[in-house]
Image (cartoon, rainbow, N blue to C red; front, side):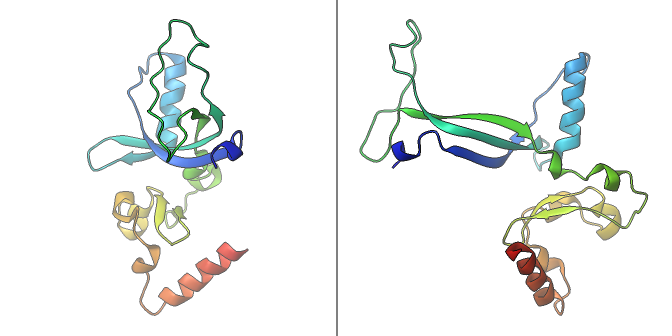
Length: 167
């Protein structure tokens, strides 16, 4: 079935660990600003992660004799999978994971931005949530938003959320 989908576009969003960059160079300084703008902040172990949107396609690996002198490790074929293909992808920082400029520059201290998965789990939480609700983003990430609503409001919020998803 994999062969039938060769060349088909693929895409996914993931969190990637942010590496160290020398801030003295202009390019590195630019990358550092982008990383700060798109970072999820430090995880429990202190490592910073950024949201990256990867898009690409499935491609056949080149034959082993295509590049003389270059040894390519290949998994041993079995009947369960095709091992002569790979994903060729471009990763882009997910800028939409941060507050938009008009909201970032807002003086309204009672606003914050969140992003949710289809099941209502927080996938992104703006740092400003600390000033509004007293939670850190890591307190909320991965948790279901309805659990933070008043018991009498939970069904209405869930229904509203479901309506937005249907549109």
